Image (cartoon, rainbow, N blue to C red):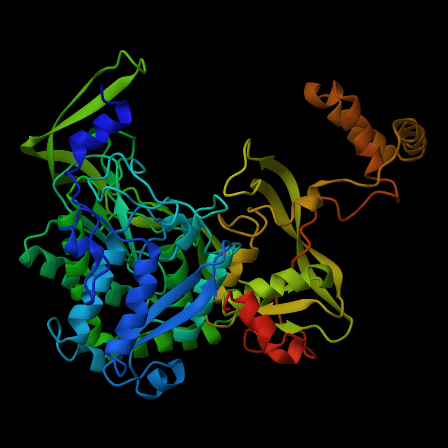
Length: 615
């Protein structure tokens, strides 16, 4: 009798032929097996080297990092005339497209489509001449260790190949949640690669799952709905170009992530979103370049998904080859706008779905919802033999949910400067080191309420806070970091350092020690302090009496004693005070910010490379 797992495979996947021997040409195992199998990582290394050997003036194989389990991370750099190094690419004015596969290593479409495309490009079979107009950097497998956790049954609702890698890395962390916090070695290496090549277009290749419907690919491009105002029209134009080309090729693309508002409920419809910077398409656009999320559909067969990914990459490259030089100038202008941004400028910290609702005629399949004897809830089942058009709600706009006025700069105290400066360098952000003590006026954030997540998320105990920024006199001490917001990616500075931002370092738990009160009054001492204060301060007696009218406060001995303890000189004023402060103007004697990773502030080139994950 077949096991449940075996039955799933038998129902959803074709019978696999024997694994072919390593090809002597540049074809992948996926191609040779008829897109039933995909190769292991040794195939990527072999093909990367073989491309460089076979086309030395067009392809270079670069190693840009090492994984936690000691595997090399590789990229193929493709150019028409040996223009492989970033400085040479800049001199020729060529835009760079950086595409990556397997950030989720079970979603292997991008790896096989990209290797197929590189071969077709360098032989001139596809887009002849395009590599003289742009440079392509292709990372076949981002999540290398996850890719080598190889086996069947790992994406049961994905139709092929018969074996794939695993979603997360060897440390059980999802790389596509790590862009902002940049904790994993793999992400640090990728940020180093992005920093070196500064691609105009960063393409992240995925496979979506969930509902079954007719569209075969989602292509989301930002800035389009959010991000720099000057870049949104370009994002919209590129999106339209790509979708039109895909439709002409027989595909059914959409420009939003096709996930229902309510799980397994098509009637709830879809929404347009601007992702936060933990994701690739939320991160790179906040550095004034274009991010593209490509999601083929897991219910389509593997050969069709790989071809769809291939066609999408071709459409993107065609658009950049035709208009990339012009769009690159626009991106540079967006940088200059950032660099001149005055303090007090409004910045959207969080986007949300807008109120506009339209009826969407979406090509789906017949489905039914019925009670489940297994789960006790409702189960959904689709019938792909019965195509139909769903008339469902769609929310196509986004609004700025949370806005802030950007300060002139943030100041990081010396005790946090070491680890935080490393993150700033990874993100390409400028800062200077405070040379001497400076008294100034700042605003500091005091947390009033904090709520910790019940369970860890991505290895961290996240925290949501409520509080306010309060003006106070402060002393900026030597060794601290001065981080101006008037720089490229100044909004990203706010995303990292504003407590209310969804991917702030505070939210990710990097500052959790501020919620631990380490010095305190013993209760019996606090009782004595309370008696003395009540006897000597009429205003305090009145304030305390009002609080006693609140039953929650009145019934809590700890809260009542804390009221007096925090008014005692021994109280720790840094408790629940966020250590990073805002400055409304730059101090006149402060050093000018320097380029990220400058050796001027004590980091050797080796240290820079290690911080960026380049080995």
